[in-house]
Image (cartoon, rainbow, N blue to C red; front, side, top):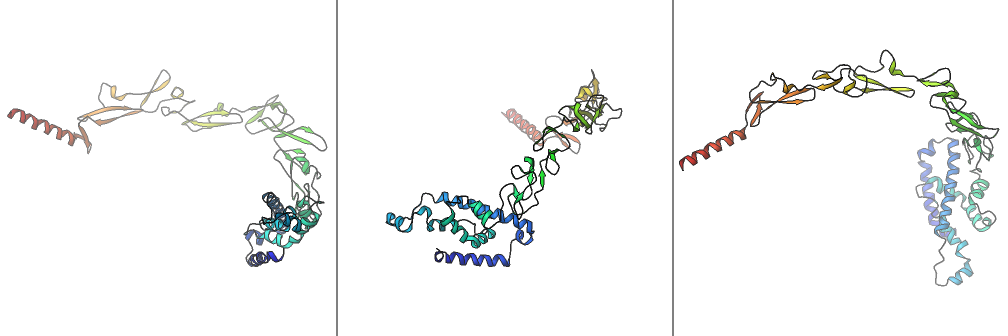
Length: 362
């Protein structure tokens, strides 16, 4: 087996020398803690790829002409050295230095497990990564000696957080709690949550009512402190309606819309000069071009006035929302502010005249 892998080992050695000369940024800059975590991840990846290799080679055999002789003489392919070589050759991507280095360093351990320990120790991860090369720990433990995480190895952080270094030879075992929890063991509730269940080993934190900053129960009557935008009355935290203030918190061209615990400013209708709500019927006053009719700002049709607003010759008035515009009549076009006959209209007139002359001659 060793002779058959000479070429591959030479290539791996060359890659290893390149790795030592130009280590990847993660290796060069990584702290000892990070390298310990990485070592366990690498070993776990090797074991996962080994399991995939077992699956990929499950239905293969030697492929020779005399399979019966091969199985009798060389042992079955299932537990053969040939199968092991095929699996090992695919454990790492060529660019994964950490993986290739670990396989190269501990290949004899993998061989020992394959030929001598597999039946008694079927869990390769536990035998190799935890017990033999000691780069990982059992779940729920951490550090060089694989001691239990906070809260115990069965339920680290009492199930309410993640143990630092869990399953690796790194970390201090401290808890990083989920957002609902806090404290060394993740048994206490964060602000905005309360204990709906609690004993010495279990804690369930549930969200407070939206009005509560801290609370003892689920309703707005159970608030200990109110959130900003809420105010405590005799019984509960209630919403503050910022929009009823004497001076509006919004700009003059906006109206205030109250929301639970807050408010928002919305734009007035285009017809409004100040407003109290949405739409042209909520205007305080109307902008130029609109007039108040039946408590609603309505567009003024300037073109319907007795007095013409478009006084230029050959012009028509077109009403627009809040105004009007003067355009040239059909057959005319604007030229420097004056409506003059369009070229096409002149051509058409000339054509009609010529046609009349022809008929007269006839």
